[in-house]
Every structure is written in structure tokens, then in C-alpha cells.
Length: 101
Image 1 (spheres, rainbow, N blue to C red):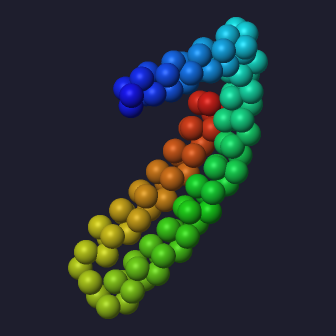
Image 2 (image 1 turned 180 degrees about the horizontal axis):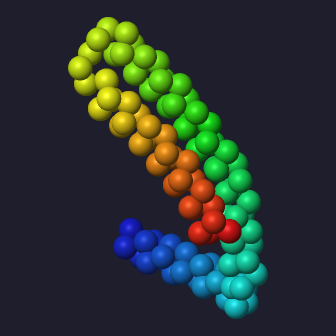
């Protein structure tokens, strides 16, 4: 009895899915809408990445200053990695924006 119910449920779900797929036509309207939605998120995402870069830059600057003030010998390595991370975030955001828009 349970197997028959499962088969009936699967048949109904398949029928509903097939009807919704055929009801959408060729799908170009859905693809265009999805494209519009994705491109609308790029400006806020780019601004968010720039904000994260600014916070990382400030925290890294304080770290480098503390190491420099304490006389730590690996200050230049910390400064280079901090600077590289900031540049990467800015360049990555700019390249992704120009690539997708």
C-alpha cells in the first residue's frame, strides 16, 4: 500500500514539474531576468569588497605599526603581506566588475 502511495506521489510531482516547465515557454525571459538580477548585485558587492578592503587595511596598518614600534625584525614581511592583501581585494573587485558587466 505504501509503495502505491509513493508511486502516486512521484507521478503527481512529475506531472506538476513537467507542466511548470512547459508553461514557461522557451525560457529566455527567465534567463534575462536572472541576468538582470545578477548584474544588479554587482554594485553593492563591489562596494562591500571595497569596505572589507578598507577595514583589512586599517587593521593591517595598526599591526604593522605595532610591530615597527616594538622593533620586530619581520616588520617588512608583515607590511608586504598586508599591502598585497589590500591590493588583491581592490584589483579582484575591479576585475570581477569589469569582467561581468
